[in-house]
Length: 310
Ligand SMILES: [Zn+2]
Image 1 (cartoon, rainbow, N blue to C red):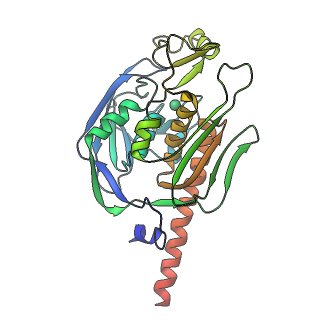
Image 2 (cartoon, helix red, strand yellow):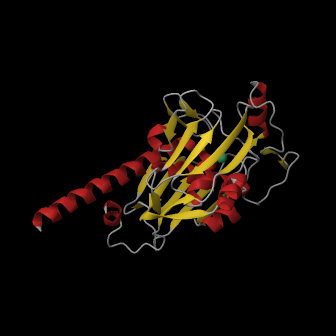
Image 3 (spheres, protein in one colour):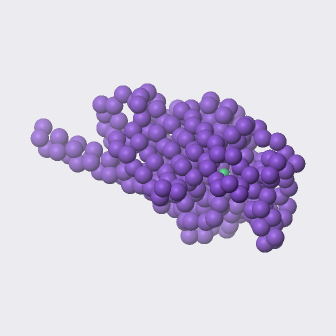
């Protein structure tokens, strides 16, 4: 009932019911930072479960909801924790789940850091897509952006503005300084499962060669080769090739989608980041989660008033 009320009177074109996957699916690999082998098994889950991550390698099998309230700051990645249920680099899995409209699932993970794969969401999206969707018996909650919200400074910001026709649009504007060998570029997408798979999922994580040298110099990610992500030097990717001319902006869009999905609702609006990273995305996700909670509260109050008046 509440879910119906939350959507009352709106004509958003992508209003839909909640989904889970039809069968379990699995993705394995090694973590970028830890180098540890890890297996992610995603299982179907009941209506209202949300996305939950469990640490199957720990005796207590602790669980953490994939919500921004569980997010903590880390450099170059998005991490979640609920007590000893700690997870690192969740954003690429989150982006695939959100874009493929999988609202309820249990992700069984046997290490702290998720697999890096090829630096993109492609394998997650491929396996989740192949698992198939089941439509569940209640509408998915939506947050419709009605005002303009901006977080950050003039040098880097994330913005949410109302959409024109009920679309959910994500854009990234990339502009590094002249010393960086990555040209200014932008990418935007009106999100659908199809467009995510074709235009976003396979865009890979990137670092400049200077950053790669620094990370390797610190003894981190020593198993990671130039083929496991994009290492970008003055002449382009080192021992690698771009999949898209603007692959970097596409990957940043992927990160934006994954990070904002932690608001825990379908987002109807236009979301743009200018030079933002996980930290600003996380702040925006908190703001969106607050708005969604506020909206729920307002709707409940209106409902109670209506009932009293009747
Ligand atoms: Zn990323």
